[in-house]
Image (cartoon, rainbow, N blue to C red; front, side):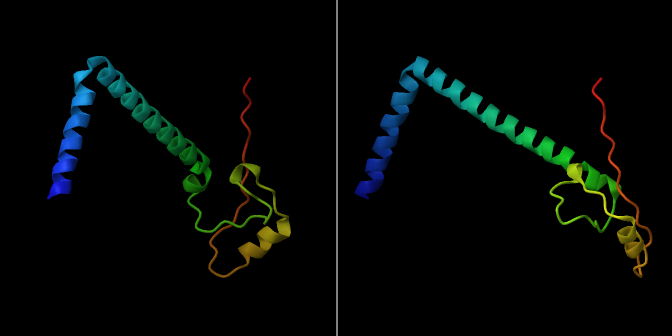
Amino acid sequence: MQSTRDVNGILRIAYKLLVNDRGKFVALLMGLTFSVFLMIQMTSMFAGMMKKASATVTNTGAKVWIMDPAVTNVAAAIPLPDYVLDAVRSIEGVKYAVPLYRAARSSG
């Protein structure tokens, strides 16, 4: 019981130290508000970049992707030879297989 009373006393002192000095309290609230805003902003920017980066894969609707083993992302795709495309088309159960072409947009 002694430790619970001590904790309550410490919390009461901490609350008084925070609230009694209005300037420090306002600065603390502004700092916390700004830091929460920055965390939410960075999280939403990351989510937007991930959505944009995965848009090619998501929007094509393909169930299986066949790519060169050296490919690290869809934006830097290495074209496969035609015989690989023919081999994929000849697999039983494959409805269709087409190469993926990404066009670069000019900024001019």
